[in-house]
Length: 240
Image (cartoon, rainbow, N blue to C red; front, side, top):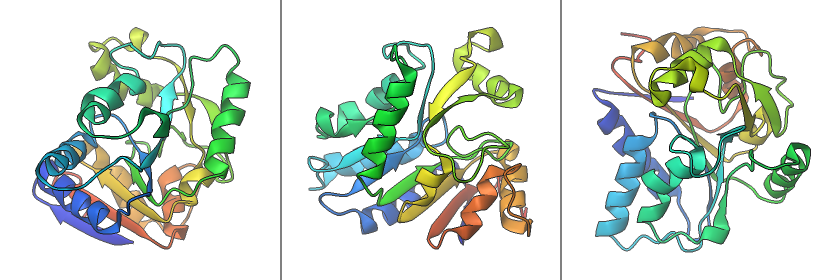
């Protein structure tokens, strides 16, 4: 694993985007994350799009996850997040955007459809965050490493962490999510893991120093991937 420490989230995100741009081809497939972690990365993507000749017209995207039970136009849905923070600002085609259909009446069918799309594509560059409990995507501790797309019950720790997006009210946070599986993440050619803030330090330390690869710390599976680049700020640096 390639480990990179920068003073700030912004600096780390800009460095991560530089790596993405170096590996981005005209028809690449990107795996995308949501939440507060990738916001500066998406800002860097938008800024470069506006000032250079980069195009997303032939880029395909797959998002990691979506909350179950909230509408797409809910301000905290990941559909809305992606439009607000990236898609509305670049020339990507709507038909090339893929996000789990977690508001479908038939969730099992939605899972099967998303899995089929993933199986028929290769994610060239996957952007990941990591939870304080080590989750990647919404693959909480205990998720089998061979998991595909599935519905997961969110742990109390994850619900509490995400309550800041819902006015601090944990009762407003969805209790389930549809997520890409660990198997799907590990099929990616290049994985870029971002971690910022003191609350991510422990997860990064376990990833970098634990000899054991365990489902109880899902991010440790990344040790088995041949091309992982980690970008952290000084607050998340396990060596600090």
